[in-house]
Amino acid sequence: MKLNSKKGQALYKKAKKIIPGGNMLLSKRPEIFLPNAWPPYFKKAKGCYVWDIDGNKYTDMNLMGVGTNILGYANSKIDNAVIKAIKNGSMSSLNAPEEVSLAENLIDIHPWAKMVKFARTGGEANAIAIRIARAASKKDKVAFCGYHGWHDWYLATNLEGNKNLNNHLLPSLQIKGVPKDLKNSIYPFRYNNFEELEKLVNQKKIGVICMEVVRNEEPRNNFLKKVRNLATKKGIVLIFDECTSAFRNNFGGIHKLYNVEPDIALFGKALGNGYPITAIIGTKEVMENAQDSFISSTFWTDRVGPAAALATLHEMKKIKSWNIITKNGKKLIQNWKQLSKKYNLNITIQGLPALCNFTFTSKNSKKYKTLITQEMLKKGILASTAVYSSISHSNSILKEYFYELEKTFKIIEKCENGENINKYLKYPESHSTFERLN
Image (cartoon, rainbow, N blue to C red; front, side, top):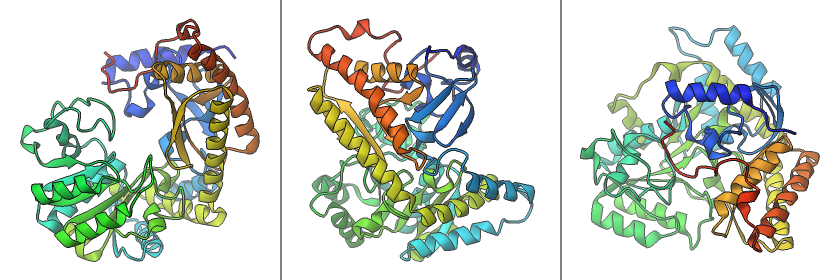
């Protein structure tokens, strides 16, 4: 397959002139994958297939809507529920009853929680949770671990030093526009480093701990339980941000598998199978503080998000989707290990099976990543070094992916043994950081 996205590249070139950064989400920038060749725009998506605006069909062995489509693109059962909701009106001057049903569903899945608020994006959900938690703890300072969105409260940690987010998101994120008065209001700690968190709590008057339950590594030495006990002892509100992890290893928040209950938990991405909906659930004691702070937005009341989430929860529970995508992820991890061993390549594998990734331990790591994207794209496969699994990834699709991926591993072995990687690369190296495009 010849790489051909002329219409897409022309439209993206225009977009960079009139849209700052070219698009709305850093993770979907073509430069992150293959500059000047990655198809920027889609016309249609179904199952795990994507058609670009040039008419090319691809198998998505990449991020599946950046983790939003566990049940595959354009799942008919979810779409039909949304279509029905739209036909009845997605918005009116009254409230949609689906939001009450969705709240009840989430509380049934997580009995420790008694109240729920809804938003439409993960960044919004995090900002809402931080506002409620600060109101409940009556303290402003936050300790965090992991990625929690783009809002001022989070990026403010880079006011103290622009490397604070390096191990949590991307290196040297620019923070122009973040009020300098927020300096020293939020502090990072490393996952599984309880002593570091305990020191922050004792020295900085921390009122809120916001963290991902698990991302690239599992908790060790009762880490999560130690964090829970510390928060309880010090009167700190504990937030588990599960916008990415929820509904992938189990039905609900992954914290259930570790028997640790937060004060607030956040769900997003997979909750609506591609339709915008996020949830903030929590204990009554903490969540009631939302009534003492202005937290309100018009489009949090649309009917589409809750309708999609209700249908998604029903379908995930019915087919036990978490088992399917975890099984797929384990196959990916096993195959990556086999290929790296066969071709004498050192790789590091991280993440939950359902959203796993690998990196090459090499000075040419970024170039190898670029090569994989380039060569797989020629075969009609959207790929990089991470895969978010869906139920649409059948055994035959995985087999095709492994077959084509092995060819790139053969080339990479040659390069590790002295060949020049640059002679294989036909496009610029993929970006790995936040960069200006124009």
